[in-house]
Image (cartoon, rainbow, N blue to C red; front, side, top):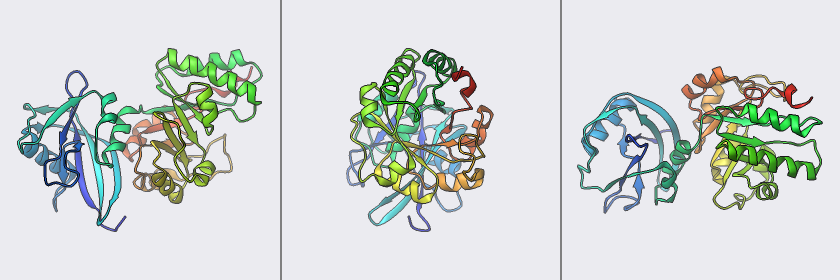
Length: 319
């Protein structure tokens, strides 16, 4: 991106049923006919809240109250770069209507992926679809029953899981992935499989999560239609590769020191924030974090937190 991308804000308005408002770009505009989250450019001297308040009043005739950051999306169009800041609108007054003769519509979050949208709006849809917690399974111990019981207990309050088992044989890996997938589905949890499209397909998983090495070795996005593709990143180069590959979300770290990777150098929250701002996808903070770190992670641009020990007692899977 250029040094000074155009700063754009977008607002996520919801109704009492949880439907999200989108507006259609008018004739003569770039990407005319596409559906987008309403908003516009930040004027010189404005902060994001003031800009969003002005834009949503001009476009929709509403007055907004508080806002909450959702995701920032850097995007390069031919001839211009933008940085799209998306915010949840926590309250608004007035009935939204197209004051600029634009069509508007309310959609369930699960319907948004089917709309024709500008490319920078796609990561916003993914951020809306994703939860704030991304649990990663510890390595299985000797007893599969103990491992699966611990996984079921650890998924309380979790809606996204990555199955990661590197130290066991292939058949046991398949069996455990299927069993974890069954538990996840019963609990309303989506499960990704670590780095293996074949295993993801065999276990009925909801996607695949690429290691940083797999990410850097990939020439194209894995073919796993209608499923999540995520990736692990540790630096700016890997973030940019993930942008180019078109991943749906990623993890970034380690933010703090971690027992699972004791030799890895922690990047800290400041560096995390800088790298997160380069990502055109939702990013989970990873490495040595606890549930109490969620607020800090959200404040520096993260989708939420990911990890093993934040959700599972590794010792409980190995008895």
